[in-house]
Structures are given as structure tokens and as C-alpha cells.
Length: 247
Length: 321
Image (cartoon, rainbow over all chains, first blue to last red):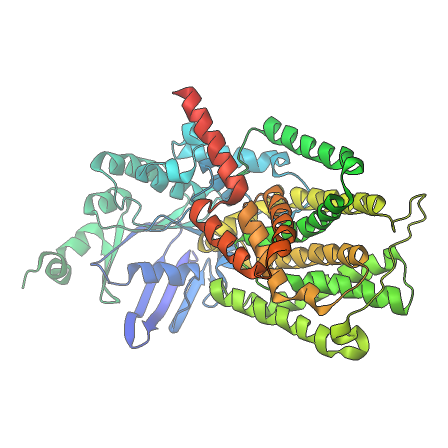
């Protein structure tokens, strides 16, 4: 089967600094993969290259079998890619519902209609309500993002990402800054996502990573140092050295 | 979406305002009628800038260019070829649209303060042309007299009151068109871009295209204001597209309240009134303008409309408590 995502020797340098070097990665349909690694390992940069917000210095990126290495972000989204951000990236002065409306209409041609009131597109409004309910924020529809708690904002991030029914979802530290209780809620929410969605999750919390995913890729100084099932990776001496500092 | 305030309250306010604009003018002293006519035309310009500045978050410092393009279209066509109102209107809007379509390509390569500087430079290009292309624009002397339009109606637009109503029709038309746009799915995308461009991009929006369309529409409506402006004044000079005009319009939007359409229209009224009042006492209009700007940023960053909404929210909370 064609991999959902495939990276071949992808590199990214900022000036003289190599953030990623020769990263190769292949993710199959329906797979749930965690990307772990210490701060500065290049995890978020990797996501930016996949989403198209940054362009690689070298290498090739295939999405659903198609070369997207230099494709604009919105074109990749149209192919079925969605992402969330580690640092919450929402529409801060709009309501939770309006946030979801913008996400729900993003891949529909009607988004360019200038002549009809937005409220006359029931399918978009319905979809917005649906994803809002899916992340447990149905009661907060009219609250502006600024008035939501940090945990609720993280949930809204997920709602925006799933509104366009993506086939590949990139989650950048979905539990960043959450309390243990909120983190559990988030994990349950993510486990409940449509199993046909392929997930790529950056996660610092090992419990969350293990709960959500079956395969793990370890990045260290911009290189893939381990890649495999959970027990293979945790047994890897290099990974133990990186994480536990064992000589 | 993102409209603050109960719909009925907003609608009532709008209806009252329009009623006042419709009924009171025959009873106003001539000088006030003049100011009101100026306000309506400037309100169109300010609302057009609000589409880019307020809704999309693009601060342009060259908006007077579109006023100038519309105005010069009228001046040149009406005096040289004796063109009628509809022809001049069509050409004025078309020219402003075309120029905005070209300027947009250049300016939208940049963002933030760089976008501001490029629009400023492009605005000065048009101003320079008006000054130097003497064979077409008559340079510094300007073009006069531009006859008032004849529309085959029983009223002569040479008189102040009928012309006021013509400006009112133009204002309402621009308001309706822009209001429909900002409440449409497309309008929502502009607000989204203002709030988070990067998020819009990864959601699947071709952000540049949306900005570009907003920029061009804004220029087109600005050209419409320019057409009315030339007919109102009876002459066109390079000072119509001076940098200070761009600054004034920017201030009208900021003072009135970005992203509210009616706020900038209100801002236009305040600035026009203030400008005429101040000029009686001093030549230092720009200084006063600067003070107003600082005051707005310091005390009402969301403008008059924003302050009103805040006050309303505060009242609601007080009632709830």
C-alpha cells in the first residue's frame, strides 16, 4: 500500500545550523506514530516541512504518494493534511464556534463566496457544531478563545484540525501545558479519533505517547536515531543514553 | 460572525442613523450640509480602507491613490470629452480597480510595516503622476471646473441638497456592498487572516489570494469615492491624493473602530468636522491629527465603535451582577 507520508533524506538548515539532516520516514495508512526527542531535536521543524510552512534544504516529501516537496501549505491541506500547533494557534478574538466555522469551510469552494451571508450555509454551520461537540466544547460555542482555559484552547486546536476530515493529522504536543487531569481528557479524546486517520504525534509525555501510538521515531540533533515498535525503541541503548544519560 | 452586539440593537441604531441622514438635511444650515456631504464621501473611502485595514489586518498608507484615480477619471473625462456621469463612474471605478490589481501584486509581497511602506511609495507614484504628467492632469493647477453630474432627473445636482442625496445614495450603496461582503464566507476568511495568517494557511486557505481580492475590492470602492469627490468639489488637484489624505483616512478607520464599517464612517465625520473647525484657528492641522491619533491609541485602541461596545458589555455585566 502507498504510504500516507514518506520522507526521503530530508534536510533543513537555518544558515549554518542543520535542524534536520537526512531524515527518512515512512508512515502507513491508519498508523499512529509518535515522534519523540529532546528539545531542539527538530521535531517541530519536521512538522513545518511536512505541512509546507517551511521548505526543506534537501530531500523529498511524498504525501499520499504525491510529491509535495515544494507545494504550498494550502494545497497540502486540500490533499487531506491537517496539523495542530505546540503553541496554541487559534483566532483569538473570535468565538470557539467561529473558529470552527473557518476550519469547516476551509476546503469548500464556497469559502470565496462574497455575496451570501455566512449563516446561510447550513452544512458549514453543522460541521462546525459537530467538531465542537466532538472535542467536548459544545457548551462553549459562544465563548471567545481568549475566554477559554488553556485546556479548552488545546481541545479547540483539535477541533480545527479535524474539521476538514483530514487523512493525515499532525499533532504537535497536544498535551503541552495541560494538568494531569486535562491531559487524560485530551488522551481519551485523541484515542477516540476516527481510526482511519493517520496520526503523527510529537509528544514529550511518554505515557501519552505510549497510550496513543504503536510506533515511535526518535529524533536527536536532527537525525533519526531509532525507529520501531515501542519495546524495540525503549530497548535501544542509544535512546536510553539520550533519555536517561546512561554512559 | 464576530459581530458584537445584539442584532436588533445594531439594526435599530443603523435605521435611526439612516433616518437622520435622510430627514434632517433640508433643515441644516448650508455649511453643515457641506460638511455632511464631505463626510459621506470620505466615509465611503474610510469604509473601503476598513475592508483591508480593519477586516484583513493590512495597514495601507496609500489609499488616497484610489480616491485620486477616481477623481482624475472624472476630471479628465468630463472636461476633455464631456463624458457623462455613468461613463465617468464606470471608468473611475475600473481604473482604480486596475491600478489596485497591479499595486496589490507588488505590495502583497510584503507584510506589516513593509507593506505599509510599499503602499506609501505606490501612493506617492500616483501623486507624482498627477503632479508631473501635466499634459493630462494640468499638474499643480489641477482640473477645473468639473461640472456637476446630469442624471436626467428633475433635480439639478448643481444645488447642494440634491447633491447631498446623491452622495447619500453612494454611501448607502457602498455600505450595503461592503456589509454583504464582510458577512459572507469570504468576509469571514479576511477576519481569519487578520487573526492568524499561519493558521489559515494550514487550514487550507490560499491566504495571498484572499488578501489580494480584498485589496482590489478596497481600491475599487475607493475609486467610487473619488468619482463622487471630483463631482462634489468641481475640481481635481494633486492635493486630493496627498499623503496627508491617506493618513487622514487611516485615522478615520482607527478612530472610528477597525472592522466595523460604520465606525470608520463615524470616524470620517469626526475628522471632517475637526479639520474644518481647526482650520479656522490654526494652520497646524497635521499636529492636531497626530494628537488625535495618539489619543485614540492611548485611550480607545478599538476606536469609538470599540469603546461603545465595551461600554455596552460593561453595562450588561453591571446589570447581571
